[in-house]
Image 1: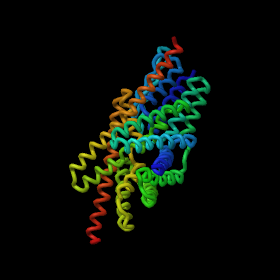
Image 2: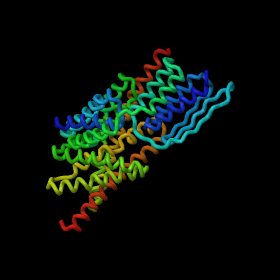
Image 3: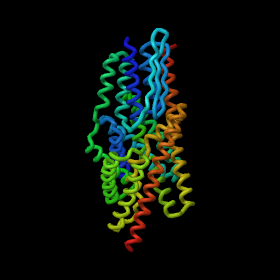
Image 4: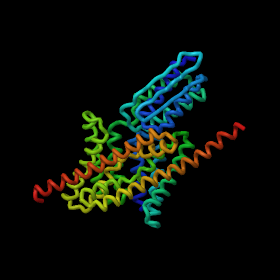
Length: 146
Length: 257
């Protein structure tokens, strides 16, 4: 599991270069990705449910990204996009293609809905954190104006 | 104040951001903020992922309007960050409009990472993703070779093809095909993890994230457009893998292996 988390760090940081993330943020983006993947693996061991594990991991990645973005005064996407990449259901896409190819339609439908659920969990996770941080931001903006 | 320069600056900032894959509300927000520094009555901006319109108007002046079509989009988080920084500086009056315009022009010609760095990053990321999914050292190595391959294929295709769907399909086809060749010839079990790790750089992470954030901020046009983009890319990956594996099986049967 430690090897997997280290791989997550390396993969996320390298992946950020493909998105032209500035050099000084590469390590931070890698940490966001590794933190999310660590929690995902941990919850997969405990709950054995991909959707819940993805939801919780996305929440953590989004939280870390929002904090990092606040500190560096950058757009949130700078850390959010590299951070959630390990959680994006690439495996699901592969298994859908694989089972369609093997003429196993039942399995293909199963993987399709699983992938859909995971994508939904990512969306919900990002949505929750966005809403929380937007609420905090609005408060701060209004207070000095009183 | 020269309204024309201000308007040109806002349009350029919007163009760079939209091209680099920024969320719609951020593009609109940045452009509106820059236009508002003029203090004129009307400063309206309407942005979609494939183009935008902007207007600056007041009883005192001739209204200025521009419609811009955005073609060739590519993900560049660094540019989004820099434009964001420039607009902050401009709105807090730390720099003049001319200075902001010059800096924006410079962003366009700036090269953040060379092609060689991109090549190495792709190799490391495909290898890394395979490790992340629990692959062995050999798995990571094969995935890294796949990474090298998709960059080279990308370079060849970029000259002739401009359809994202086709590029992704061809890349996934070769990933699946070569992984099968490698695993069979090395008598190595399980191509699954290698293929999953190798397709990760193709996975539509930016369209998915932006589709969610755009939809939830109420930009339904951009949200659906990006969701469709993400779905098309995913379908391309699935098609490519299916064809790659099918093609390999066909060859295997024909050669009687």
